[in-house]
Image 1 (tube, rainbow, N blue to C red):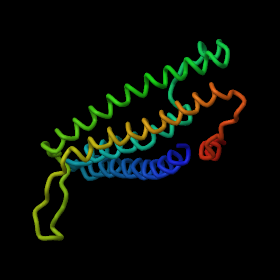
Image 2 (image 1 turned 90 degrees about the vertical axis):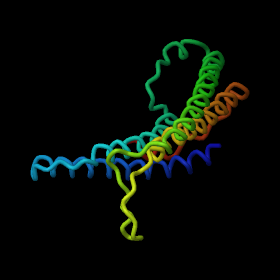
Image 3 (image 1 turned 135 degrees about the vertical axis):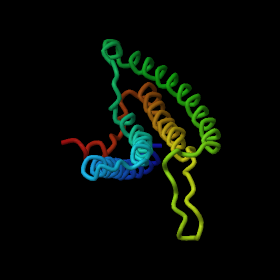
Image 4 (image 1 turned 180 degrees about the horizontal axis):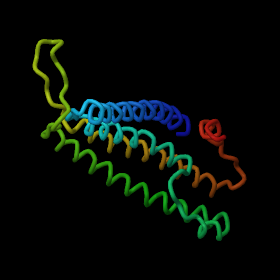
Amino acid sequence: MQYLNRFLLRIGRQLAWIAILLMVIVILLQVFFRYVLNNALPWPDEVARFFMLWMTALIAPSAYRWGGFVSIDMIISSFTKLIGNLISLLLLMLSFFILIVGFKLGLDHIKVGWIFNSSSIKIPLFIIGEQSKPLKLAWMYMSLPIGIFLLILVNLELILIRVISICDPLLKIEPDPDKESLEV
């Protein structure tokens, strides 16, 4: 599970930094057109939102795996290691079920997204001799279930780590080398 998550999250982090780079470029383009040329473009706001949603969906699982989400662990650390691991396992299992519900809702949202078009993002098809077609909002909404699916995979890994820690408290779990390489 660690190797699968490491592989998928590495890809996700690479795509996330590309998405944030494109988002910044689109925003700067809009600033240039609006304030220098005095001619605001209709599409950059929605395109930037598109990249922001995908960036969030692709980077959040890494943050979850590395403990980057806000958490209050004072209570868990006040118990013995076994009880703290049992409480953490219970919370991870609760998170798992919430993520499953979120995944299902995300899939339902995509179904609706195929009905609606983007108001400003058009896909140019002049290369093949057709008119431009509006982007379906489902492509934007797809970020939700994909991000949640990756979070589910990370959550399963964290559950397995807790179970292993409960069964064999002396066993050392291999830390994620990607997190260590990013720390300064």
